Image (cartoon, helix red, strand yellow):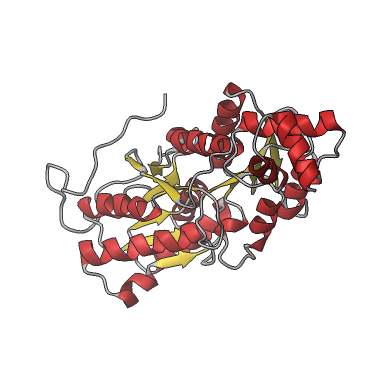
Length: 357
């Protein structure tokens, strides 16, 4: 083995330690150096280890949970464009009900020799999931980056929006309009973004309205991240006397508007609704939706930049890169039944941000 390392090192013009790092899939080796070592293996007639066999021409996998929520195609487009500009070919792999699982899609991409994988809102965001699957992927020498949902158990870079800050923006805006009975419609408790939104919601409700834990808990309704889920959650919150509802996705917000109309309520006169994402075309709904804009472009580009650093042998630290969201005020929020808002925005409120072009 020592003789073989020496031969490869001489052929590649590097140290035996560098050859060992490449053969064992260790980080910290520049892409050009790694290629020199692999080329030396080929020249000397040694078989490459399975995990180091030549990867297909610059393929990068992108795994999303589904494409019905417009935020996922929006992220996929930004990530795909950024990869293409860097000479890589994106391979979109989408989970579907009754179809392939994340693990099956990951295995398929690895078998096709992708250079790396970006996971969007995957099992890493599910606190009930087994995180060992990501360590197993790392052991195969495949770099990866995780978007939306942080886990301290996974040694990888994470890209996330600031969900706590998002709730502060939404609730502060509604309080400035006079709302005091504000509900939160979110997805299942096991997801990290849901837990963070709840943390932010509780904190700002305590600070802005002096709401106690029991009162705030009554104003939180779990459901599904779908139009139907938003409708069900909003119906329950309206029954509890809410005059405004903050939703964990734009799809849920559209469901909340439908719930209000089925109860003969008008948005925003009788119920103010705030979404989350600022999905494409959401500015053209009836009424145009006030929402929290995820910094999709910045997050997508950061995910690609971080992954390419991993592929190039200079891995990012095991940390989370958090991006600040933005309040976009449109037509689905208006004055509530509480104290009349002043002529100028309150200290925490933000003016309307420009819509998408």
